[in-house]
Length: 373
Image (cartoon, rainbow, N blue to C red; front, top):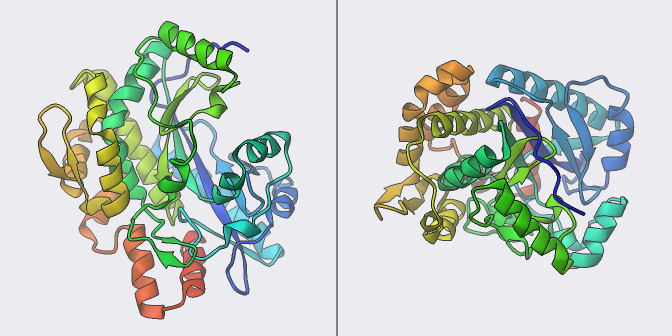
């Protein structure tokens, strides 16, 4: 199987995917409700799409192709409201968040599709431990070479969106000390991490053919990179975010990535290089561990900067692009978040647990928040 031809997309168009938790409404543990939810939701006519994920306690929604923040938020709210209504008919509830606070991974069931069965057979228990919940954002690119350039330029901003979305402090009933513990589960997979530093599609095809020859990969789906090209869509896909607790925050983070992408592509403030990755894993860890209070290193100047300050500075730097893209509302949302001590979802979850001392109540309040309450 050869690598697909890279489709052309309108620059800076957006697609947003959110993986959601399916919980029961009595003890708020995860439950196997995906098949029943899909049966109900397929009767609805929606702008967005809904499909299964690897375990039956998860479901994924995805918008259509959007050009601005208003379109993203409209589609996310419509599909959220439809899913919440269907879940209610089944005595289920839905929540955002990168991990479920107290579920036991060994009780999860793999959703029955050939692809998911194959993944389960290959990765064993890791497949069930992969019951974690992320946001993915697709950004349209006019051609393959531009997509690879943007992929590597965007790598410097991976810590930004990890920190903005961080919502997974609890795993298996324990406070991990991380703001985003979800990514530790992703990192266990052998084809995770960063893409190879290749800036032309011809070079990337050579790399893919070599990997395919080894038998390790059969398609781009086998790569769990933080950012990967999606040739069939003509996009790059940023995959590092936890699912936020609200669709409003998800839309705002997508707008941030859209504005950064337009700034990078039109102004070319720097040229991506292999040395950008010298500090990549360290910066990624800082964002996962400390969230907005993390400190990252500039790969060229070696300057250490607080993430909260860097994100605020970037929002102001891309302001003119936000106007052109209709993204001002999303960026204002993030500026308000940066000023709020509980603006981080991880901080909000810990505050609820500090007050209630009962993780099922934390999950219940996550459900209320996701539902728009």
